[in-house]
Length: 124
Image (cartoon, rainbow, N blue to C red; front, top):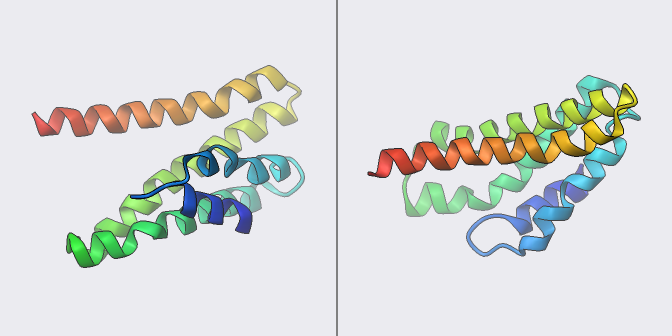
């Protein structure tokens, strides 16, 4: 969890090292089938949430966004990431390796698409 959180922290935000975002999920995915489901969910959520704290100062001090909104900005993608890891885990444990390989990026791309579309529609 620590490696993933640090990689998300350094790989996202205003000045990211983009390649770290690509490798950040790997440790969580590697242990997803080896520990209980609740632990996998908690580990994935906390890794993303910890990584999202890199924008805390920007949102709070620069933009003066209320704390609850900043927490939601971090928690919602963390929740989707955790559910995505659980979907991956479920397919992998059932022996559907190809589905496991496809479900993780598919869910994340869908989430990003919905988020971008929502933002785009509200800017026009």
